[in-house]
Structures are given as structure tokens and as C-alpha cells.
Length: 268
View 1: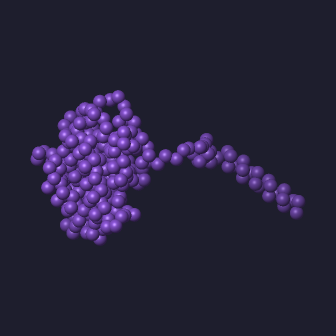
View 2: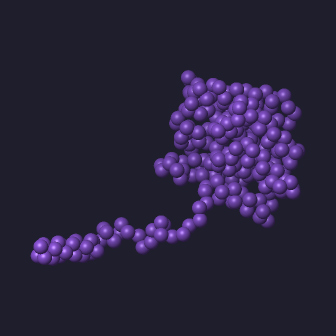
View 3: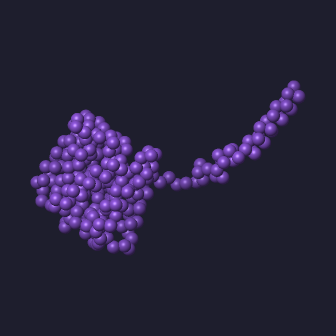
């Protein structure tokens, strides 16, 4: 029994020595894992909101900004390049830099989209700081010619009842807030994009878009940009090639959005 234990111990020590001397074993083990290091949890949306707030608090003039985009992750992801949640997929950063990054002064834009925001969160961000909000439209030197708004799809999850009416009224409240803060800006209401759920498109997205179109077309100072038809196929279903997932556009989706928007602007 003693001989067996001694042989087993010798074999174990030999294996450990071999592993320690193996270059591949050393290469696979970093000096320190992230899991060994204290790191505060900061979700993507928190960093995004903090970055926007810091930018708005900076000394750089906002007078060059001609366009402001307001929305949720679909707007936010104009600012992402490689999709951090879907390896090999890309969002709209290259398209944004090419068109809205300032090389064309008339299209110089500010993106206020934050991933995950519902309508009520955007209302808080646009509420003046003096009234307890985040004051994202408070800067007096921010005088855009147009504000493009796409908002509401996040309120279709864990929704109020009836969902469509809550979204319509919420978007109208955001429109009123934008007009209050920037009365000289033309507000462009953009349609919601199609989801990959045909029933949801039929029962919620299309009716909401129809109501927003009607409101925009009958309200002075508002315009409507209908993106929905460009993102569906001949059957009326979501074009999957234009999306990274069931909700967020791919790089090609952002390129199409940009093309539709710029062509719409060219028409005056």
C-alpha cells in the first residue's frame, strides 16, 4: 500500500512539472484575470448617459449643431461600430461619422439616444435641470434647426394598457417638451421601425405610426419621416438583412436610414 501511494505521488509530481514547463499552459493563463480584480458594475446605458452629460457640460460650443437626434438604443447605436453583444456584426458609427460628424456643416448632429430608455426616461432627460430633470436641452447655445425623434418601442415591453395609446400620448409629451425647450427647431417625428413579430407590427407598430403621422401632418412645426416601408420586404415582414437582431439596425440598416433621411432633407 505504501509503494502504491509513493508511485502515485511520483506520477502526480511529474504531471505538475510537465504542466508548469509547458509554454501553452503558461500562455493560456494571464497574469491576472478580470475575475480577480474589483470592478464597479457600470452598464452600457449608464456610461452612455454619463458621456452625454459630460459632453453637454463641456466648454465646447454647441452652435455648430444643426440636428439633434432623440431616442433610445436604435438612435444610440448610430454611435457604435462593432456590436459588443454580437461578434462580427456592426452598427452605425461609420455612417454617422461620414455624414453627421461635422464634415458637412448643415448635417452636423448631436446624438442624445440612450439604450434602454423608455419614453418616460427621455422626458426626464429633457426636463430642465431647474425642475429636477437632467436638462439635456438646457444649453442656450444649442440651437438646432431640426430635432429628429424616434421613440416608443421600449414601451411595448412591460407595457401599459392599451399599449399603443400609451406610446402615442408619451411621444406627444416628448414633442411638447422639445418644442418648449427649443421652439425654433422643426421637430421631425420618425416612424417606428418594424420588429420581427408580424402580429406586433400589425397590432401596435403600424397603428402607432399611423397616429403619429396624422398628428405630425396636422400640427404646425412638425414633420413626419416614414422609414417603415424601407425596412420591410414585399410581404410586409422585417428585412432581416437590415437588422443585427430583432430590433436594432445593422450597418446596412443605418446606411439606408441615413440615405432616406438625407434624401428627405434634400426635398426641403
